[in-house]
Image (cartoon, rainbow, N blue to C red; front, side, top):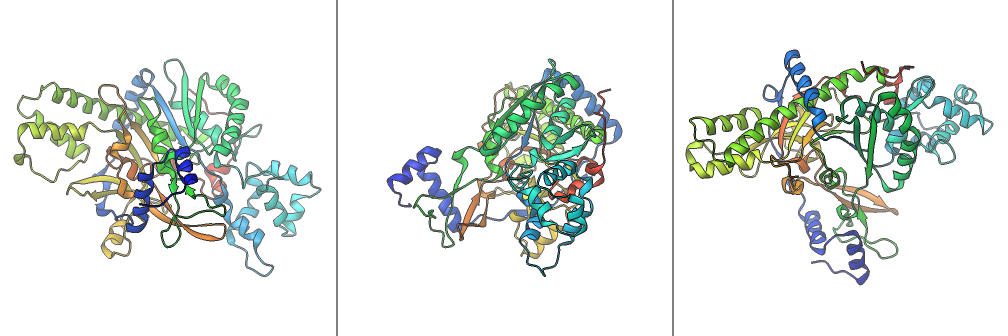
Length: 518
C-alpha cells in the first residue's frame, strides 16, 4: 500500500477517490493490462447485420410509431479542446526558417476561403491592420494562423470542437454544437415535441456552451417547432486516475501534491448512467453534416432506433416468460438460446445438455438481462480507430466487441493479421437501452471489463509521466452489454479530426436553407 500525507488524504477525499482505488491503479501500472484475444473480425453475416431496403423501412416505421411514447435522449461526448485539429498549423508557427512546409499547411491555405470561419478570420485580421489576401499571397502564414488560434484572435486553439464554426449557410453560421441541436430535432422529439440532448463538456468550457445555447435556442425552437431540453455534465473528479513516473512511483507536482489525470472517455460511463431515458443515441461531437445532407443520417438513426425497440421487445418478452416460468412449452428454451446465439451473438462455451433446467434458465436470464446497444458500423475506409471483432472471453465464451488497436498485441503476427483483416470501422453511432424489463436502470459499472484500460506516456512540467485511462466508453466500458452490429452507409460518418477535414465536400459546400421537415 502506498504511503500518503495528510494533504494527500484531503485531496483524495475532495475528489471522492478511495485509497483502495489508488492502490488498484498503482497495481495496474506495475502489472499492465492484458491484451484482448481476437477470435476473428466481425464481418457481414458473421457478426454484422445488413438491412435490406424493406427491413430498413420496417425499422424506421417502428421507431416513428413508438418513439413519441418513449423518453428519447441524445448523448454527445464533447469534452476537451480542439488543439489536435491544428497540429500542423502550430508546427508551422514554431518551425525554423529553412524547415520544409507540411503539405497539409498548403492545403489549408489554398482552401482558406472555403472555411465557414473565413470572414470572421478576415475581419479579425483587418482589425489588426492586416490584409488576409496579402499575407497569403506573400506566404506570410504565421500571422493568419496565430489570429485563428490565439486568445487575442478567434481562440480556436483554446475552444472545444463543439464551439468551432463548421458550416456556412450564407446568412448564418453553425457550430458543431448547433448541428447536433438541429439533428436532434429531426429524430429525438417526444409526444410533447421536447428534444432532449445531453453534452459532456470540460468544466472550463461549460459556460461557453451554455451562453451559445441561450443565444440560439429560441430561433431553433421556432424553426423546428420543438422545445429543447439541453443539459451538460463534466467528467466526475472521482473518475480521475493517479499519475506515476517512469518507475511507477507516485508522481507529485512542484508543490508536492499528488498528480491526477482525467480517466479518458471511459469516465463518461458515470455520466451516461446518471441519465433518465428509455432510448439513448450516442454520437461524437464532430460527426455532423450541413442541413442538406442530414436526410441520410436521420434515416439511419431512426432505423437503428427501430432495431433497438425490436430487439428490446423480444428480450423483455423472453425475460418475463422466464421469470414467470412460462417456458414449459416444448422448444421455448431452445428458441431463446437460438435468439441469443444467432441474433445477439452470445455464444456459450458449454453445450445445452450439460445444464440442469434451473441452471439453464438462470444462464439465459443472466445473458438477456443486460444493457443493450445497437452499433452502426461503416466499411473500413482507412480512418484511425477501432472496429468490430469476435473476442475470446476469460470464461471461454466468445462475444462481439468494439476493439481499439491499443487493446491488441500487434507484435503477435496472428493478432496483427486478424486485426488488419477487419472490414468495418466503428464510427461511434450507437443507440442504447440502459433500463431493464421492469423499468429500472442497470448499474452500468457491473457490465464493464476493468481489464480493458490502457496506459499512455505523457509530459508534465518537462517530466515524463505514465497515465492510466479507464476502459473506453464504447469499448471495455460496454464489454458485457448485449451488442448488435449493423452496417450503415459511409455517408453517415463525416468526422472532423483535423481542420482540413472541413474542406471535404460534405462540409465545405454552402447551403442557404434549413433542412425541411417535410
